[in-house]
Image 1 (tube, protein in one colour):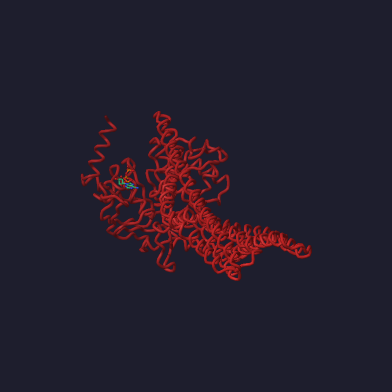
Image 2 (tube, rainbow, N blue to C red):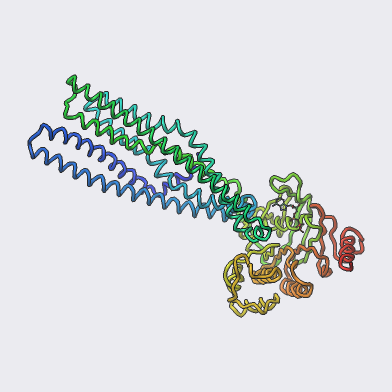
Length: 573
Ligand SMILES: Nc1ncnc2c1ncn2[C@@H]1O[C@H](COP(=O)(O)OP(=O)(O)OP(=O)(O)O)[C@@H](O)[C@H]1O
């Protein structure tokens, strides 16, 4: 419910449009009732009145009423749709800005298709929030109250009948069907998210599915998801028509009762017969305003769930804001790093990934983190990047707590190469300028030469996800991007794992030249070339088991020494 209040607040940013649409909606509704009342009266009067001037006046009133109704209906649609579409666009921007500010871990928590379904489908379904949730009850009550007031001059019994009709069609029937509708709406939403997720996976995994001849199985899953979604939509449609039919039947019954009561009143002389047709016409027309209430539960439930799903992404994944912007002081030269008793467990995991990590990286030092696969090396880098946040302990950059730093400011100041680096559809130049667009073509070409890609042209095409690049070329381009960022803190996760030894050495030479004064952390599987590092951190099962220079670790004949021996024996065999 509080989420719907957020949406209402967004809607009220267009207060003028909202109020004008209610005003014109009310005018359109009340003129419709007046128009039909005048018609009923005119027909009865024409049967007994021969005066042409009276009839002409009545006809003129009906015509003016028609124009007024059409005009106000147009204005109501115009303002209500303008308010709705502005709200939708504000909501998209608002939601996107929130998602953008979230920690990158949000993409680990939600499957891509589900996130897409929320951003597109759920936002889209909120287009009904004003038009079919907020607006209909307001107009219904206003039009009914005005009609009841008008009819109270003619018959109290008819007024009571209309009031009963209002309560039944406007509140009791929608409330009765609300529960049923809730179940169907939930199923539809889940099916939509499921379908969207399956489609996203189908696209992403198309090549693997084809290679392993599993395309047909996946297609079948996709078709099943689609069938289930269509079935639920059909069921929702049938339920909605059923609700509307029951509502219409009840309103017609009330109109019959108005006719019967009116006829009785005319027969007993309590009502002038010329008003009988008017009463029936008014009754038939006024109930048109309670018919949309039949669809109220669907749209109310839909809007409520859509806002809950949207806000659950941004509220439960909010990044930790820096406690005080004033104390922020970012490094100009290479920073020092200190981890103080840091532990971390991935959400929903039993086993902790990092345990009691205490480590100091002096400013300008070069550190290698080594250890077997799964020992927590990449997770340690993710903590330094604040992609994930420590459950215990503190991380300091230049004696400032990382948790107090603005995430984006932090990222701006780090040269990062992750294990998987994304490349966008476009040119080499566009992909290079992603990090820093201050460079001339000559400078970019020079960096390409430096990372051993002299044969690449800046205008060469890069396909989606860098499909036309080899693993090694991607790593060299990632290195080029990192070099172009020109920061004094480097976090590199297996930056050369796909390169041959010769190219790897050239890249390390470039790195050591480029990052001479900088603080560098390299995660590496390979134990070769670590002699020049200031310190080597050896990890196993989420713990630091050894720290020292290459020579110190070899002399200690401990864990690193054993790893080195294994590597040697594998190379020789
Ligand atoms: N998103 C995640 N959710 C849950 N567990 C994870 C997640 N990412 C990694 N892990 C687990 O955390 C542990 C450490 O993973 P991490 O990627 O840090 O290891 P690593 O030493 O870098 O391994 P590698 O050398 O193979 O890249 C592993 O057991 C892994 O299964």
